[in-house]
Image 1 (cartoon, rainbow, N blue to C red):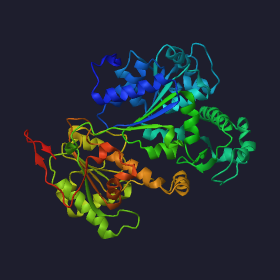
Image 2: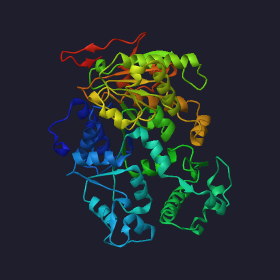
Image 3: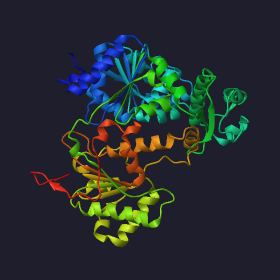
Image 4: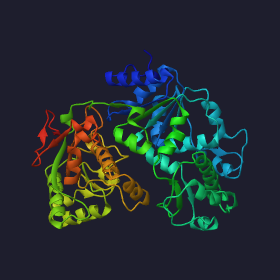
Length: 494
């Protein structure tokens, strides 16, 4: 059977996934499939092959332009990528983004030309932000029969970001927007947001933001039962969005194609139900096993204390000591200590400098310094997702603290109040992401140590449905740090 991208063959697990997706595309029915498969499975080739074989014109959506470029490199002949206006030069205004802020609609616009070119392709690849702009009127895409959401565990945050109205405080005052209401109704907001056109557009950024705000508001008006929330975002802007991303999932994804594929190493049924509002009978779920020997990537549960805001000093120091003991027992190899917070990272560095001078010399909070040294230890709160550390880039890692979301974020707080299980769901998803950072393919190997008792408890409760099968097979509860074994090549290997 044909395989796109010039690949010679599919592995059995890829053939299974491709077959399921092809069947869904051919059915002509509204089908949502959730494929939870770990790194190393080859998810991209599987879903592209399934859609390609079916003949369905497909949109592949990603979170980042880097991943978009990676997919395009593998399927350059079959796929066309779509980029935002900022990526194109305008012959009149310098950039297409600047031109569009001034109402430019020239026929020779390179930004618009890409949409014409894309209609000749069976597969288009773009990022979530660009997809949102396109479906809200940036340009016609033609008929799309299948949508693949890659890195689907990030889809909720992508929808939150793409479909929200953002106003400065001056703009909110001009519109007489009531503040601070956290939850509102479309009817209550209508008299205020109907005057968006009256706002000053002093800069090109203001003009672009106004255009986007008007498109989002028009989309909100098409969903009258939606409950908006009015919050302050991390940039200090007034953000008007929705409590849950479910309405936008239906607007931007479910209503745009018959077949929807959610692909991720960490997506779970509970996330699909809670975040996207689907009933359990509204989607198919497939959980794939670990594609390599689980012994190559053990996840050790070594509870040393509950590292929450009320943690006692002795518990914190016990966890710190264990983390440094792990590092000390693994000289000559790189490792990562995930601290979750910058305050914990700083405190660990100070603790090491005072008590473990030799080990402290290996510690760094710089990713650049870490990759440059063969035995550095990266102490960081921010590399648990979005970073890959294959092979010698990371032979071991330590999780100091359960990665709960920040309750200081008003949207997180509102969601936790609405759903008591929300915090645990997000924390466990973050934890699963961290556990997948250091074993990236079947020939790779590395250890993960989880020291926070709360995190250990979460990974022990496989019956909750929050732990994917591929990770559950790697979890081991231990009472002491194991020694590092040696393989035949005299390289460190657990």
